[in-house]
Length: 80
Image (cartoon, rainbow, N blue to C red; front, side, top):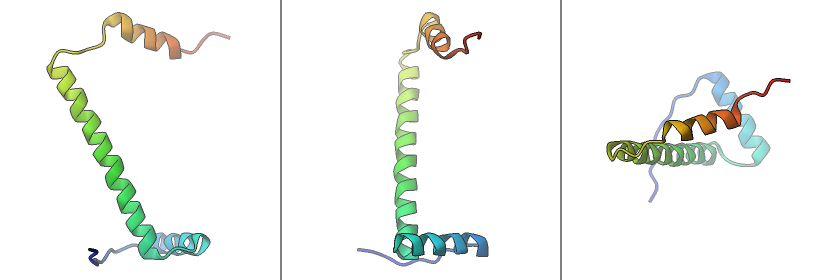
């Protein structure tokens, strides 16, 4: 089942949407629905990972000081 709803965009955003629709041979509606779908999936993933992290912290599962330092050392800029 699908349902219709209205969205308000400023002229500049609408022009960008129309340009992308023309370049990709897709409708405004398809692009908007895809953008919303992608946004919802990404945010659901992020929220799930945050909840996982909070649960780990609540169980006392933290990286040791040595593990944290090892990660920092791996990515720390090396002198030239």
